[in-house]
Length: 310
Image 1 (cartoon, rainbow, N blue to C red):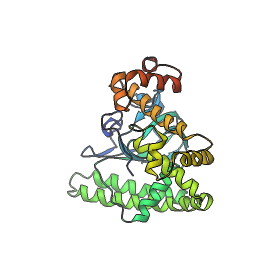
Image 2 (image 1 turned 120 degrees about the vertical axis):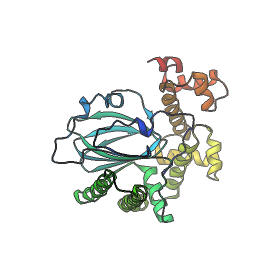
Image 3 (image 1 turned 180 degrees about the horizontal axis):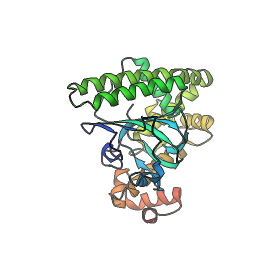
Image 4 (image 1 turned 90 degrees about the vertical axis):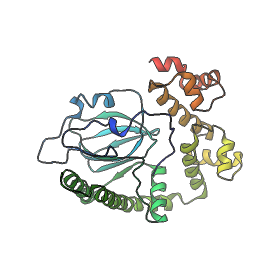
């Protein structure tokens, strides 16, 4: 499920997630947090000081961990990898490592539970079919809309994990955690499968498959490669044909998609406050800072310096 990430960028780590005393944390590699107790009124996250840095910032975060984010009540609007999503009751948001995300809005009655795990916590893909389903689904979208029964199944896994991990005398937490995460992964694959099958039936064309592969390659290589020729070579196509396909499927030129992903990375790096403009230019593989500045200003409308100081 992992996407390629920039190892020099450290915007939002697992340990940065705000949590209360009911959260479960295991070896700083796994967190289960949120309103699991339905008998209590939901916490108003919009009034929680620990949540304000994540809810009020106008800038995106580079997320360095995987997350299954389940909405039980209210609504939440987010932007993830250039796409905007609205979560409401029974919405399950899947976030992969390396994603760039931003919370846009949150209702006071929003009730959320989430599981987050670090990159080094490996979930085994039991079959090539599972792997293909997950990759196809996540190349198109990040939200699963569940039924009440499906939500109850996911919540049952969350609650079992929560109860077991909070038992101080339970000695085999690592094995238990890996086992239940494997079950959760297979459950999510099962939920994704009908979406993927419907997409395949609707899209079925070679052109759509090429576009999906182009986007996946772009997510992995956008920090280093900006030429249509590179992505055409990865897909064993000519640049002209790839450009025609991308425009036919999406109504946008391949170069526009490439620019969007590069600029998204650039904005996150600049707003992290950790790097100079020269360092960002180097990390995104520009020939020099001047070239990066021209590229950025053409896309955003202001210089990297001005954007950093907004």
